[in-house]
Length: 137
Image 1 (cartoon, rainbow, N blue to C red):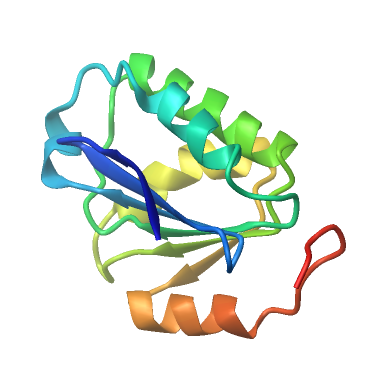
Image 2: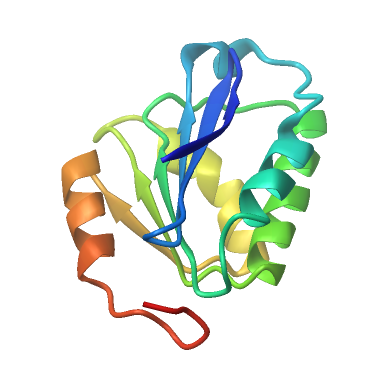
């Protein structure tokens, strides 16, 4: 795994061999009012993967953010779609509103998303996916 960003609010790593990005929110994301490196961090991650990549997201710590953050999230989602994402596997805690908050971003950009209750299941699902066109073994 190649570490792209380790911020107080989130972490982004890339597994080049699997053509996969791992994204995780941290508790500080709940109170964040600005994420000055967010777009650049994602651009750096997307430069490390090929079209047909997947994203594993740990969204167990998510809350509703203000409009300023939402527009930044949506801009990054658009970059992800344009870069050729095959699938996003989102992990949410059952009974919490985390999925509702992420749906405000992902569904507007036509992101291909599957939802999971734990990281293990999401990882196993992604590992079982066949390589899409445009990826190399």
